[in-house]
Image 1 (tube, rainbow, N blue to C red):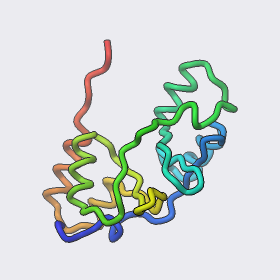
Image 2: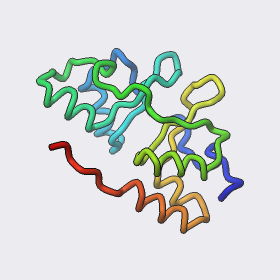
Image 3: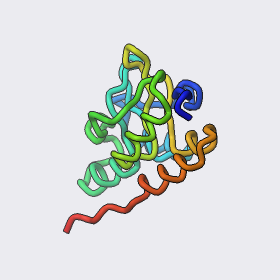
Length: 145
C-alpha cells in the first residue's frame, strides 16, 4: 500500500454545499446521496465539512430552523489531505482523528475528491491496514456527562 496515492483510490468530483446554502438543502443532498457528510466549499476551495451530526447538534438541538445557513453549523478546520498524499498517511490521520471520510484537495486547496474507509478497504490490497483502520476509527468515545 505504501506506493498508492490518494489520487488512485479517492472518489473524484464529490458533491458539496456552500456556506450560504440552507441546512435543509444540505440535509436533502445528504439524503439523496445517502451520505452523512458533505464538504463545504466557496469558489471550489474547501472551507469545512457539514455532517448529519452537525445538523442535529448545532441546528435542531439549538432550535434553529431549516433555513439556517450551512456556514453557521459546519465544522471549520476540517481534516483534509492532498491528492498526492500516500494512502498510509491518510489512514494514519483518519485513525488518529477517528474520522471515516476526508476531503482531498489539490495544491491550491481546491476540492478534488473524498477518501473514505470504504475506498481504502476496497481499493487497496492491504487487509491488515484496512482492519486496523476500521477498528481504530470505530472505537467508541465516552459521552460527556
